[in-house]
Image (tube, rainbow, N blue to C red):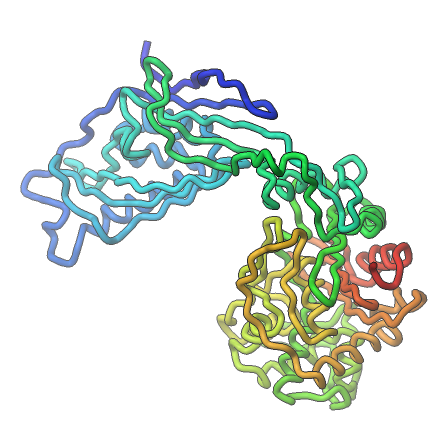
Length: 547
């Protein structure tokens, strides 16, 4: 019977304050020599410019297939495809590794003593729910008699310590997290606030309580199962002094409950909502529909559509390239490499810039693209709004991206929040808060987070102009869905194209008093029609200003 990869049970340990789930991984034992080396040739024999490009191409292709989960293809690039596929499958599945990142290094490539070409690579192995295991290894390649190169299969290429006598095992341990409360000390539990259920463990652990998942990748003896060494450890050790101390967040139980209820207006579509304080960035509510799984509110990557015109307007106003009362024509269509149009192909001949903003005229904004340098929109987003800088808010986030446009068509798209501009409701709520206050505050869900952001305040005149534009959008423009609510509300709608076979995403951002809100509805068609009722529901259920 051949020796094949298998999972082995781990040694039993008494967990502390919780239970421990264990997964183990075994690997095949045999290693073969692989193909023979073509006589008279070596990996550097074709010149002094470095290793044979064909060998490097094969190395990178193997790593790319492995990283993408194309294990049969990766194994087919080795001298022993059957064994390679079994080991790679056992290694990634048994250690709960998902979407590994494997990168070959150009430095350190050398001919090894056995005649193979050794290519160093860095492995970043994300272990589900725990963290990333990073290590270095080498990929041996051997030139074949018939020409070409193959990875010379051996266990040590997967990891230098993987061998016929030692393998790896994953051990998990769950510890009971401390209680999590809102800003007033009200207990936050997943049953009452479903959108928070996936985040409570992270909030507790990240705030110093030491709760949440812990684990380790251990090197063990194949015969005895005894641990030889710990290769990687994940999670914080419990702090006994903090175990009974609640973790207080910036969230507000009333706002959170209203946000969860408001997403019922999404009619079953994927949607998310964030509300935060304008004066300090503290998040009052963060909700997702569906509530389980991916936190699209803070980690989603969406084209923000016309809500991004807040940033575009800021860039134009900062350099006095346009004023609210300037005439900027709004035709139905404008061609910049491709044909751009307005929602429902509307047009507003002789419109002012204020009208272009309140009616969300794409063609007018695109016509102003020459007023900005290619990288200027991204610079303004980063310098004044903190977009694209690294945020630390207490939970994982995606912090936005505004790349320099590759061509004029992409620059046109970026003016209206399309192309490669990426954001999410957390980012757009923060953008709204910055626009109406003039100052960026790193958002936060917990206290005491590191703040590495560096921004500049918007000039008072620009802030005043932005507030006026957003207020007019509620009273006379596309955000009239909010006009019946109390308070001096300003807003901006957005419609973002996704693909030819999907309906547009709908966006709406708004501010009232000391709160900024952003909502997105996937395939919501229009912002006012899909995200508008969600924001309306939230703001009608909460006080004009948070306590």
